Image (tube, rainbow, N blue to C red; front, side, top):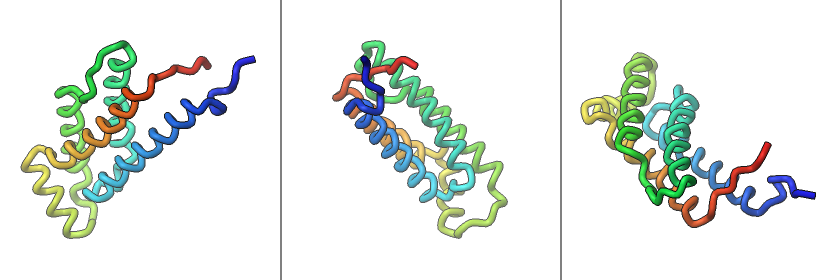
Length: 133
């Protein structure tokens, strides 16, 4: 009889690393003042990560998110900021986000991408197993 995925040490380690990644993404977004849209942004960042992870599973040794994924994340951050610009928030966050708008959200994008690439590096060290439903 096959063990349930939750009984596998690989599955538990993968689950823990995904939780750590989500926490990192939320911390970054909150620190930048994007708390109101953090869940939506996190979901889209995870989709970009899945694309990169799929390439890793297929045998590619690429550990970096593609330039296209980085551009999409930057555009998402820009659009999110423009939609929520009138929401009151701390002055520090307002200045940081306004300056980020001028630089194409390079700083926050780099932080998010780095968190995802750290996760990918861990996935490279541990073979990825897909569990049958």
